[in-house]
Image 1 (cartoon, rainbow, N blue to C red):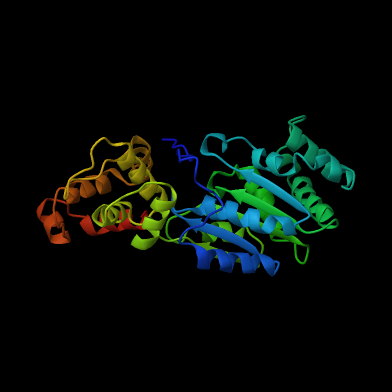
Image 2 (image 1 turned 135 degrees about the horizontal axis):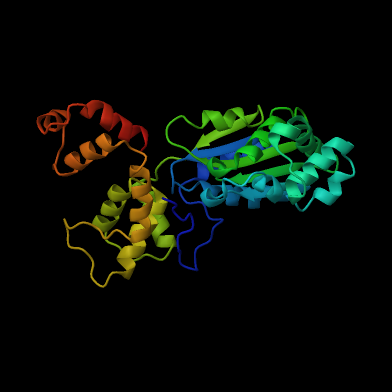
Amino acid sequence: MTVRRDFQEPARSRPDLVIGREDLFTSAREQLGRGGSVLLHGPAGIGKSTVLRALAADYGGAARTVLRCSATESESHLPFLALADLFGLVLDKVSGRLPAAQRTALESALTGRGESTLQRDGLALRLAVLSALRALATEGPVLVVADDLQWLDAASAELLGFAARRLGDTPVQMLCAVRTEGQEYDRHLRASPPDTLAVRLGPLTRTQVSALLDHRGYTPLSRSTIRDIHRTSGGNPLFALELGRALAESPARPRPGEPLPVPTSLRALVLSRLEMLSDEARRTLLVASAGARPTLALLHAAGRESAEAETAQAAALG
């Protein structure tokens, strides 16, 4: 299932306002100020793109050149697409400063002319990306901003990783965001510059969720409703906003104890995460959802013999 990453928000929202992430934002901003790189990671909807945009807007002015790409799942099969997004507008500026073999390989990859592949032009392409970044850096600091690294096409990811590990003291910094569960950000960290700071975004507190909903105009909401939204969303800001929007659009608010309305967009996002589980794990969660206070003993009594492993798999996926 492909789930859209862009959810409708009221026009009054400001994407550069980072609610509940002030300390995290400051830490990442200081890392960039020291010349380092930053990798934001966390589950879907946790606010990585919001923080990424705010950091890029706040720090981007310090860079001479800002290169951007934002990958999508539906385009992740297209080779060199992210590379074209990053270098397409600066190709004319750097191509004349590359050795002939590197220039030919990079131009073929970015323009689609010829049949450049990693298998055939691997070394020339890798060196071309490194050389292009070094050429841009001779004019001043370079900032590479990449969102949704998990959807980066494999060729672009390989080339960027090769260059990132070899930049050394070249003034090129990377500001990236990737959707992760648990510790799987390590793979992306290994493809980042050695001085990269990994920053995990966690859930918001109830007070922060209340401030976020208030800022987006979902008011007035009672304290009990805020508590229900925070509990149901798990502190995930996207989930909380979608629940708040559903309440704002509902003609009648649920009574105390009634479940909150779940919009289709949020349901699709949650279902996409459930599809990552095995069939048996989903059956175990279904049985658990029928109990007011499910325990492993109760699941075993209901015939779920591998409840420990299956609930652990669900927990690992958030």
